Length: 588
Image (cartoon, rainbow, N blue to C red; front, top):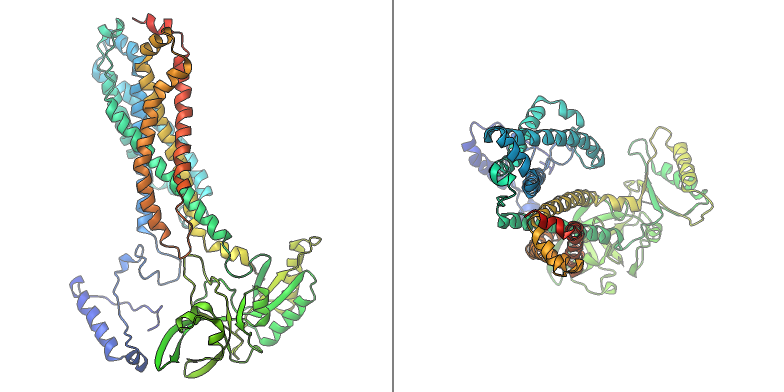
């Protein structure tokens, strides 16, 4: 069985699965090949329930329809949504109770006119219900737009038409009722506690909840916002690092065209190359196999004997001759490139040289390695370059010629730097040449820099998601802070009035009111920084080549949050401090 073969079996019950696995593994040991016995290798079998195929990424999807759904990502997104919803409810409670005094008179009058507490609670819940419905309608409209924004990485099948599904409609109705209850119940109960007599006499005792709880919620919100800000900056930094790191070969202004795998021959490829040579806008042309960085897994196992020790190593084969190495500007450290395309010689990279136990490129020239019973000489060594994305380490590699099986299926070319002609004109000339030789095939051109960029689609998706999560969490945290600021300034209106009469300046009043809130933002940063460091450090372990978790990421994030908080606080505190103190003291 090959790596991609799948055997379906129907087990009598789940309890017999370990026994079946053991039988299959025993069979594999019984039928071991000479190669497996010699190098102490063995094959193992794993059983996976059919229902597990949708989520389990361990073995991939057998029909090559793409990657299986990632349970952890879905749970993560679900938690972000739930968390944002909870933050919204918390903020609603904070803002509502913070402005309770403004509605106290209305409640007092309603109670005097005979409204019961139950009626008032339903009135406030009704108001919250209307607001929640309005929010739900806006969110459906936004969902349509956001599905377009995230269309690059949303799986097929996740479309706006899903909103017609009775299950989704039912879930939305339950959610609206739940959010109404969560966010409306507490303010309704707090607000309806006012006694009409004290309200109408202006003797309001502030019963709008515990300040400690508000502070905790604000710190909680800002901690999450800080984690998102730090993560967004670092992911952007890693993407920038990957996009700009030297891969070890030329990527600018280089493209390639694949010959069709059917109806192709060596003669046609040579003719196509001759046609391309007639195009003056192309400076270099080379025939070969895959590009230096691709998803190619073409490798073999080699044997090398040194000082009576047998070394076994995998070796990736990249097909390309002198023109290929020259076109991609791959640096030759020692030796030479193969004399011609059909001669069986190897040009290896530094990683392979080190695996064989050599440190200097010159020392390995002329050594022979064994590949499927034949011996091949090493004639050159090239500088290491990345064959895949920067997530993967550099693998042992050999550049080889066209070894008689017509494996030069790709034509590579570099564009000359003549600014007079547009790129599209040149591409249409290449297409014309291609259609002359392969009239029945579709023409497709692959640019090297785009190929490299495609390696990082997942990271770009993550960056986009994080940016949105950051924006939302910062916005929600700021609304929460605004609620706390309103609550505090409402409570301290008289104190501000007295301080103003006693000669306190606007700046002094602002510092006095902001000090408390900045402390909360500071505490949030102290909590968020180690959490973000731990999470991001783990994320960076996935990359063989990575950027640093620099101190300035944390400093910039903390400073940014402080600035945003200061702007929000000052807007409110300055307007309170500028009020005429006579008005705030007249309420006695």
